[in-house]
Length: 375
Ligand code: SF4
Ligand code: SF4
Image 1 (cartoon, protein in one colour):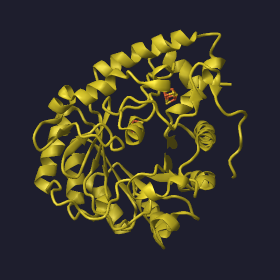
Image 2 (cartoon, helix red, strand yellow):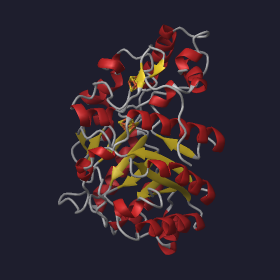
Image 3 (cartoon, rainbow, N blue to C red):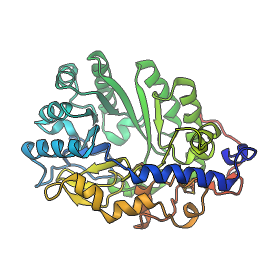
Image 4 (cartoon, rainbow, N blue to C red):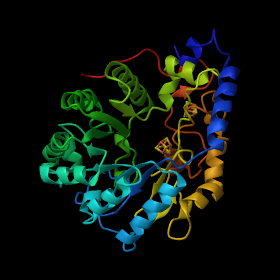
């Protein structure tokens, strides 16, 4: 039974839409660029088969260290409190510790790495520079080396342990495809054993991954995986497990009840691209999200404050006037689909999300009972 059906004694479908719309508008009107994901370089010391950005060599016009310092000051003034450094592979930038050190004076800083260069010594340097969290990409014991290269799984494990020993909050970042779908429980267990958190993302066939469309999860697999992760999240705690949890609100009556209740302060806007979050490319372009590859401004030319205020594309995202199935969905203000992936598939930031299993107001999922994942 879907969350909407479970709550039908308390909320009409129209109530859910109206109450969540009201909260959404309030937050969208006062939107702040709170959280940034910055690709500090396109260079990478691996050539993962499914890299969505086809990373490899540095761009010829990447931001210099001096420009990086300017960007940090600028985004801090605009209201950014949380910064994740990505790549490519951020640790191949020889000045990455200086970037971490300077940014840490203004905001909370994390780094997302493949772990190849991250030994005990480097973990301690990151800690001294002020890092708050390290995400290490790890796809499961059987599939990791297949997609990323021989010996890379062991190096990722070494990096996780080194960060843990250095006292850094550590997160496993898993990319799930049909290759490692059945390894999700093992990776969750590994994270729990290591005292780490885990973030589960889905493989989408872009960039170098374009050659493997058959590895993308089906809607049914996506639903089963998210149900599994939701159960584990309830078991281990909110902060231990994160995943692309937009559509799953259609199955999560407790969360939907909180965010739809007009007397409860809990808010969930679903896709937060251009609402609280944004991305920065290695050459200083601003994106609504690293997944939404649509340039909305250039930090070499304008301040983030101005870009955030004036960009028509960002205003469009904040309108959430979606099309197709998402446009008639009672959950559009608490989900909204992934605008980035939708854009990549359709070239339209408002189109319906083709990855979603939910059928609006028709009694929930298209697929019957629950199936268990292999464990
Ligand atoms: S139809 Fe769109 S808004 Fe509704 S649950 Fe699916 S992705 Fe989210
Ligand atoms: S575009 Fe996708 S990845 Fe980016 S914030 Fe929205 S839902 Fe998340």
